[in-house]
Length: 470
Image (cartoon, rainbow, N blue to C red):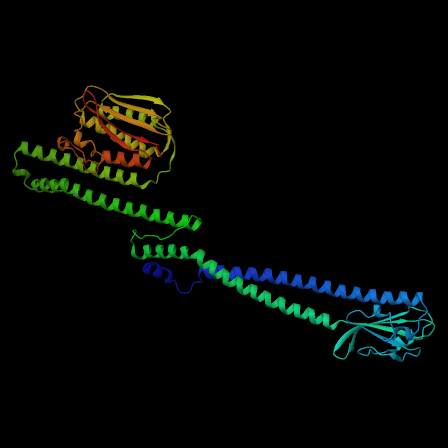
């Protein structure tokens, strides 16, 4: 946990973290949505309340006009002490009665102002005449006032409805909406920060691990990432990538060490023979001929060793793009080239579907190494070198075998012939570096297969590889 904590604390100065960006973005989107919803909700609610209040007031005024038109009524009929007229006094409604001259006969609570237009309505001869006043200030409150004539010059009735308390209610609703919006935005920001930290925590670990690799060049760092989402898959892929890189680095280091070890012998021999060249005039003709022959042989062996090292390194690179190939065609080309080089007869036998996905160059190199190996160990043989290509032994698998009648391989050496620079005791006097079969193994493994070596009944060896086995 100490290492994990250090990874989490490590930040590159001057950069905004992904968690902060995610949290701010989340809060900004939530704020925009909340403000939009709040404004629309408040506007709809305020509009509904105002329309409802207006419709109630209009109904009260219309009922009053219908009543005075149908009945001959006097100001006394609307007195607050007169029974049966509570219908025109609903909640938050004030009623005030005016006489014929517009004077207040029965004041409302609170009293309503009387204008010249109201006095004209009170003196009107026609019942139901209407004068409306909007936003009338009465004390500290705001009213809407409607004056309805009784007709015949008998006076009028004023009906007023308070609207300031409705606006107070809407203002309170507005304040609560704003508070709720602010709370939602703050909550969204906190939740976004928590969620961003939870999501990006593993990304921070991956970033820190990558920075550690770049700084220390150590590929053996354990990546502590769990989960099965995209971040978890990325962590496991990164861990596998580091493992592959570490393995590749180990392979390269071992290859260099082994190559250095193997190169010392021919180089030492070359230096010894070159030192003898300084005294070549003192040597007898037979010794001179042997010295020159040794130098030529050692130069060829050194060249072959370098070429095989290059081939082995190229086989590990996997830079050649895979494609659909027919192994039978590759084997036929290699067989023709081997016959021209060695003068030996090479027989190819093919059965089944031998197409597979692979890298042609690598496969050609592997088959060539097998054929050259058979020709080298069976130099005096008169029997042809046989190559069989069989597919598929199981779905997607193609098998290549090279059969010879050479001295064969000892039972104890069968499991080691594919090791780098390994040479059996009875083969150390023959030319070669011990890298040819290790290249075959690398090619087979790169193609999802495996190499194999068997003692052949009647003498000789069956050696080959499979590809495409997944």
